[in-house]
Amino acid sequence: MKYVLFRSRLSITSGAGQLIKLQAHELKKQNHACQVYCEKKRFKFFLSTGLWARKTRLKSNILVLPDKDSFIIDHSGVVKNADVNFVHNVGQGRAQLTEENLANDLTDNAIADTKSHVIANSFLVKKVLRNEGVAEERISVVYPSYDKERFNVDKRIVFREDARKKLGVAPDIKLIGYITSGNFKKRGLDLFLDICGQLPQSEYAFFLLGGDSIPDEYQSHELVRSGQLIHKPKCSHPEFWLSALDLFVYPARFEEFGMVIPEALAMGIPVVTSRLVGASEILLDDYQQFLMETPALTPFVETIKRLMSDQGCYQKLQQCGFESLRYTDQDYSQRTLSVIGSLRPLSES
Image (tube, rainbow, N blue to C red):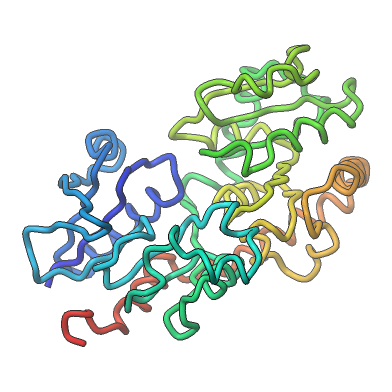
């Protein structure tokens, strides 16, 4: 039997793309037959990972494959004939609908009426799926890991001075950053800009990594118009720019997990975020007082000022961040494959 890993659009700059890479390598390490499939962007993925993806297509959310004896691991969350569906994204709209509305409108969820097992990346996502009618016993929660060779304190020490110099940030200035691979609205870029606008401009610098350019809808914001926001387009090596930060601020309106949270913590960079970000679930009890219930302007500003003015508090949060990463003691691909290995192929059911 061959394991098939599928995502419609492959990108190594996305969390899902990184997870597919990890799973493929682990399957091959365990001597399993494995093949990655996609509809688009396979060549760029190959250049970044060395993994050659074969091209295929979805037909009414059915994955078309030449080999029928396949165990399908879907990373798009929509493949109806998959044995396992990984759900990396549910979308802010679906996440914020009422339970009644979700029960009446399942058109966005192609897997609600299938028999596949679903692996969610947080309990936040599991709650949405349960509201959409996916049975409790069909859902497992496995928190994603991060690349420990790329994101660690040693890399931050190596990169930090050069990264800050390239950004034009003086050593005594506190650099607040926001990094995302996608949707600015969902992930609260407007809130980030408003938060930064409430901080003393003489003490802080502000950095955005993501997108190819800053969208027009944000150009009128004073922070952007004045040139105070430093922007770099998304790239395949965010650890270089991440190393420059003193604090990572993530006021997402909804985030299924948020791989950049453990990546920042691993580099010794405290994170200010809310419980509407799935990765907040990995944070230990001592971190909870620094988590907001929702992304709101005043609590974020007050928390940032508190952390950046109290070195003891800052260092305590750094240490708590490191300890929160113990969930990765067992490799992510091993944790997911442990779940997958316990399942019978649907073709045998």
